View 1 (spheres, one colour):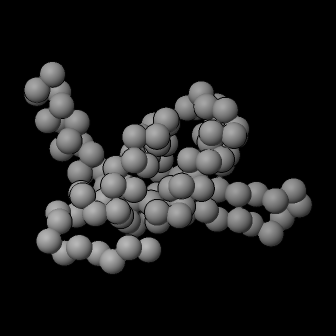
View 2 (cartoon, helix red, strand yellow):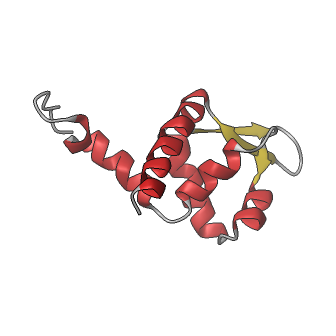
Length: 109
């Protein structure tokens, strides 16, 4: 890991670039939006069906979002195993930021 250059703005540092790259990956914004509109956690197949995404891509995006701390993955000790996903507190704080960015996009299209 490279040392953090405090003279560069966050968006130009590695962690900033990684986060922006995550937002640009296919279906990331779709997943964040869908989860932000739910009052309950969502299961894998529900996400797959609602977003229209392949299982492989969904699995990768969910893993990315969990690693970045935006989505929480809850595994229940049942047979068969039940896994549910929901926005973490960190993920919930991203909503107003994205709303602001897309508001700007809409005004400047």
